[in-house]
Image 1 (tube, rainbow, N blue to C red):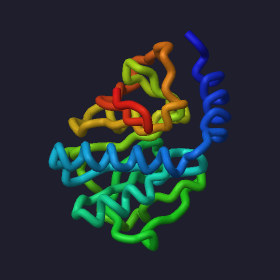
Image 2 (cartoon, rainbow, N blue to C red):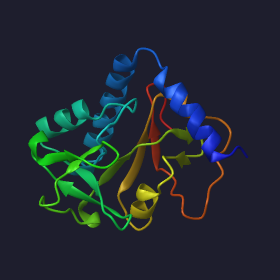
Image 3 (tube, helix red, strand yellow):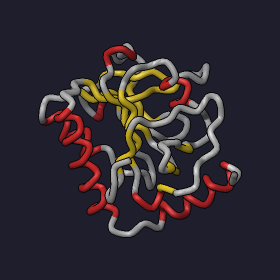
Image 4 (cartoon, rainbow, N blue to C red):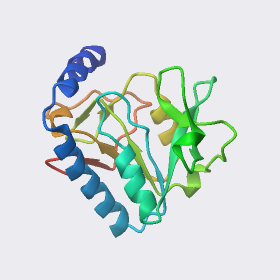
Length: 182
């Protein structure tokens, strides 16, 4: 198995050099919206995209336009994460990593109310394993919830070799890229 930190470094570079991102993001958005509609999901946990990640801001807007609530995570000092309601970008602020998150006065969402969580990642494999940024926020949150977990990424971020899974790692239920669904 390849060291996760080596993979993280390599795939940050791979992701930053992907061409035609906006076209690929449009394909991913359509697939995600189709999935959410087919499954009658009402509350979607989603991340605020950062740097070279698949852009989620248009997806959030499109979901909200069709009456589906989107909620964003907020990181707490005790290394935990919760999702919060928000109604506009004015209710968001940058955290220590520079990522937009809801202000702490926003209303928290109970994990049971979330139907689907869109999960970021640097690398996914064909067995639905994921490598994130190494802090474990999502894995800790996802461990005890029933929401359907969807990893979204560019197809270049999917590897054939199985990612070594640690005991605390949580597999995705579905991975959606611009070229395939796993």
